[in-house]
Length: 162
Image (cartoon, rainbow, N blue to C red; front, side, top):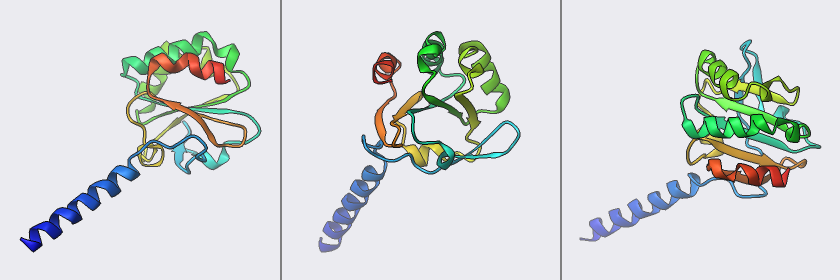
């Protein structure tokens, strides 16, 4: 009986430990370090994201309907995002990423403040802990998290915080 009680306590402790690591980052958290890939296979690190202005990171899947809606909303209002560094991150192959951006974010990705990168090594989820697609993270000029959401209905909140 004592062994069973010990096993239960150990299992409970492990559950709470895993749950604590699986939480989304809190406002005020720094941008996690992660390595992604440019189209030319060059490395892009989140450490390369400059401070001094806000940065928006969107984690998307090309086949996700909610991701497509978010990209379309941002595309329509891309001029309002001119002073924000935008990073579109996907685990998809570049042919799927290209279809997504050409269909839903055509004007957005033409902007000099927008960078599209591939999460080929699948590190985004471990670094940022998104709940689902799309995952949006808005960081301030100090590279600290201001707001995060996985709801396409929250896009207007990003524009208000911009």
